[in-house]
Length: 98
Image: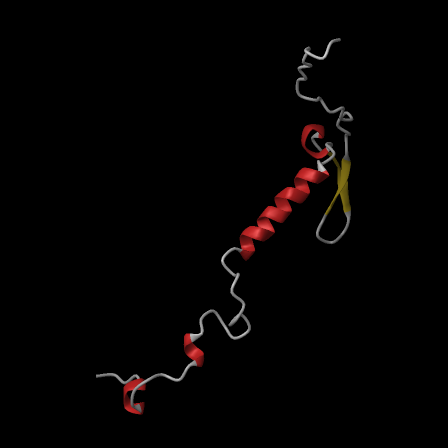
């Protein structure tokens, strides 16, 4: 191979183990055995991709925290307005029916 040749590499295929057949014991609400159930290997027999799982969980937790960057009034409540004294005379502040 010379220095002008380029190597084109396609996608890397990961070798994954074959799905495992799993069996679960069914139980009643009282705890008595009702028999066993074979779970679908294409759904319950796969090993999860831990890196992708970590990325998804991290993204979801970040989305929950979105918009809460300001922590100045975080302990007191959602907005600073209830902690300030209202302006004006006292009778204006009292909500009375007309």
